[in-house]
Every structure is written in structure tokens, then in C-alpha cells.
Image 1 (tube, helix red, strand yellow):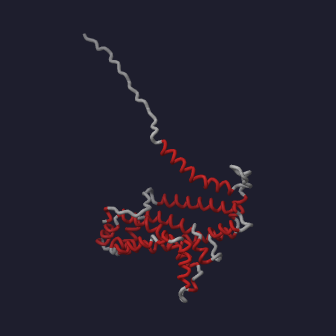
Image 2: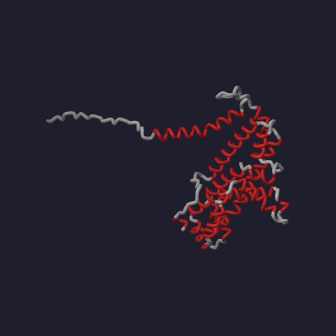
Image 3: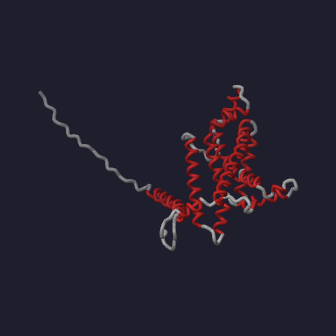
Length: 294
């Protein structure tokens, strides 16, 4: 009878080494995060500060500025005007962009080229120059002179300004969804172009529409120069009120900080709600060409 000698098994436990190659990346990322967070934190502190002298933190904290600012009729009116203006801008831009871009993908690609060139104008011209140009153009004809200082002209200016921020996300989603193939399949089933756009294309580019709506709403909501140049103070939006409050010697700089934080929180909540509505689909911010679109 033979016996088997026990075999000694030595367990080799590898040493865990902490890589130091990524520390510059994380350091840079952390510094960038602090750089972005500091203005928000400073604005928040100033909105609840009693007095803030030459020191790191305020002398005390209070909610008085929030209560006084949000209960002021002028501020509420400016907030409602900005919200209304931004919402109307989103609706008009969507009505203009969606049919034209859809037709560019399925019928006439030249339309897309023209739209992309028009989308560069707000970036080639300063917003103030664009506002003065719109006002002078409206005043050049007797037919349009009554609209030279009207709210309608402000809306049209915001549409021209925010147009690219809706076009590019929708363009990217439409290219990725394969708008041409979807349209051909729908037309083969007997659907009209309008039914195809509403029932087939729009549900498949929902993410791009949501992204473009967020960007368009934020751009219009925070725009100052167009409303100020065209209407002066007769149509006081929230940015116009904020600048006036800072210029006034009896103004309320703490109230400006309150509305800045309120706007930040409002945009954040709207973005989260709309992003959840996209059901986790990736947000496409830039136009892209996908093989399915060919």
C-alpha cells in the first residue's frame, strides 16, 4: 500500500498596485469641477447672505432676499414673460425645423445644406448686431414699421437665434434613426408624408427633439440683447430685469443672485424631467451621418 505525500500549495497573492498614471487626469478633472462649481456656490451664498464683507463667507444667512424677490410683482411678471417667450420659441422652431429637415432627408438634400448655413449666422454675428439688424429691417418698410418695436419681432429674433440649437440635435437623431428608410417603409404601407412625419419619424427622433427643446428653451430664456434693443423696457424679460436691477443704485443685487439660482434650478429640473422622458436613450447634440440614413 502506497501513501501519497501531501502536496504543499503555495498561494500566490498578487500585489495590488495603485496606478499613478491617471492622477494628472483626475487632478485636472477635480480642478475643473471646482472651477465650475465656485460661481454657483458663490451665487447661492450671496442670495442668502445678510452682509458679505471682505472675507471668505458672509456674516450671516437669511431667506429674506428669496421671499422679497419672489413676491415682487415686477420679478414675477418678468419671469412669466421669459417663460412664455422661451416656450413660444420652442414651438415655432419645432414647427419650422421638423418638416423642412424631414423633407431634406427624403426628397431634397439641398434644403439641409441651406439650413446648416443659416444655422451659422447667430455665431457669425454678435447678438446685439443681430438685434439691431432685425429692428432696422422691420423699420425699412412702411408695411412692417408698426412691428418695429413689437413683441412679435422679439419672438422672431429669438427664433432666428435659437434655431441652430434645435436643428443640430434633431439632425443627428434623424440621421441615426435612418429617416429615409423609415419614410420609404411607411410610404410603401400607404402612409402620407404628414402621417409618416407625425407617426413614424417624430417618435424615433424623440431624444433629439427633447435635447433641442432644452437647448432652445435655455437659450431663449437667458437672452438679453434682442428684447432690450427691440422693445427697450416695454417688454421686460428676466435678463432685462436683472441688468436693470444691477444698474439701479437702489437695486437689489441679492435679488439678482436669487433669480440666477432660481433659473439654474429651474433649468436643471426641466432638463432632468425631459431626459427621463427620453427613456434612457443617448442624447445626440451634434449632427451625424449614419449608414442607416443612406
